[in-house]
Amino acid sequence: MIVFDLICQPAGHRFEGWFASSEAFADQQQRGLVDCPHCGSTAVAKAPMAPAVPKKGNQLPAATQAAPVAAGLPPEALAVMEKLAKMQAEALKQSRWVGEDFADQSRAIHYGEREAEPIHGQATLAEAKELLEEGIAVMPLPFPVVPPDQAN
Ligand SMILES: [Zn+2]
Image 1 (cartoon, rainbow, N blue to C red):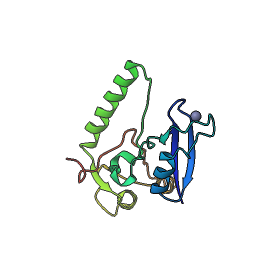
Image 2 (image 1 turned 30 degrees about the horizontal axis):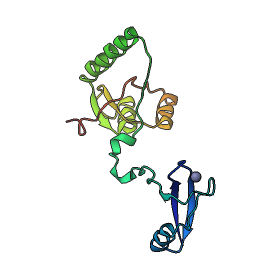
Image 3 (image 1 turned 180 degrees about the vertical axis):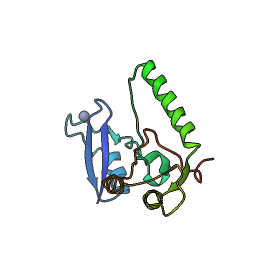
């Protein structure tokens, strides 16, 4: 069995019709055996197909990644954020990117196991909480940082 979305020509009623095959539908349509359940018209045709749903595989990974967003902010606020983002970028120039090693590296610095220097990287919320509980001053960065190995 095959189901077609059908539409009657005079009134544009949409309805579904079940047929043994595509040929069976064409045959019944020609002989006027397919009629609209709403108005009885036998002038029916296949309805245009619904728009195709985009395939997930076609999407770029970047498009599916969540990122901080804002809308409707006044221009002054945007200007402040832009300034802060620049200040963060400027401040991080003095700091070394350690990526996912952040928790280990900041611990090593805190306990004097390595030379002290400003670092930044990635930490989970749980890691950050542990570090704070150990008395290590970590703070979340207000703006996302593109890791150097991912920057163009
Ligand atoms: Zn109709």
